[in-house]
Length: 296
Ligand SMILES: Nc1ncnc2c1ncn2[C@@H]1O[C@H](COP(=O)(O)OP(=O)(O)OP(=O)(O)O)[C@@H](O)[C@H]1O
Ligand SMILES: [Mg+2]
Picture 1 (tube, rainbow, N blue to C red):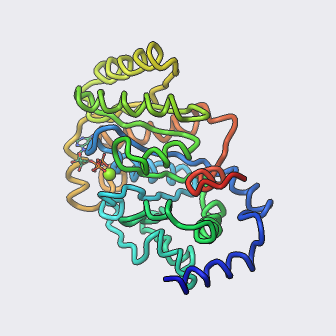
Picture 2 (tube, rainbow, N blue to C red):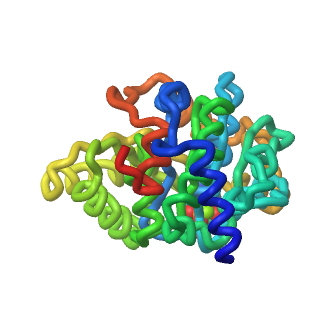
């Protein structure tokens, strides 16, 4: 272990004496849109929305990378019917390159599995973090949009990802428990996020009116108690085609693009592209720096 750490330190220092990022790299990184998809309660549809949203964005000509950062239940690959041989943290091994951990799926998406134990990255020493960051930097050259599928709840790792991303999509269903937990996420975000850009997605609704009522409840609470304006990006209908697609391990947008749920997710992609984007973006650079806690 000690030997590996020493080797890493030597490698990193020989490549980059002080700063972990070159200025040209930094410029490219800043232009990538980094969007975290999260929820308070688990099982509300984050991963299905992340994967299908990625396909809808891809269909609009964007280069999309999905990062599965759900520590407990990494399952983006299950929905994509893809297998990743290597995980994000394998990058810490000198012989592993970014190409080795990125899976190009048959759906035209790029995908990185966080694997279990991504939280270990936070405990890496400076040299190891620099190495990881240097290798991950090149994601910015391969994608215009990076979607980060986080776990549910307020755990340290989930919060780290949410706070590092420029945009947050908070998924909730109309169930009271899901709403209460979504509010808890909004509250933590309102306290800790330096630039606030959180939008709601209401999943599993039976009618449009229901989605409006649910969104308004959360928006009013955010306004009144957190003094934070929150937009709603859209809603997704309750639809058995979602479960069927999961069982077939084929993304809904490919398997049944004309179902109600698929059309809703397509509309979410349209809203993401045409809606207001952040004025001050930190991009992939800001995301990595925040995750690895670099000050520059
Ligand atoms: N719009 C929908 N209509 C019907 N069923 C849905 C819908 N969205 C999600 N589901 C069901 O909920 C299940 C859980 O979805 P998903 O795995 O995307 O949730 P998640 O929030 O990522 O869960 P976790 O917190 O465990 O990561 C799906 O397998 C599917 O059966
Ligand atoms: Mg999930």
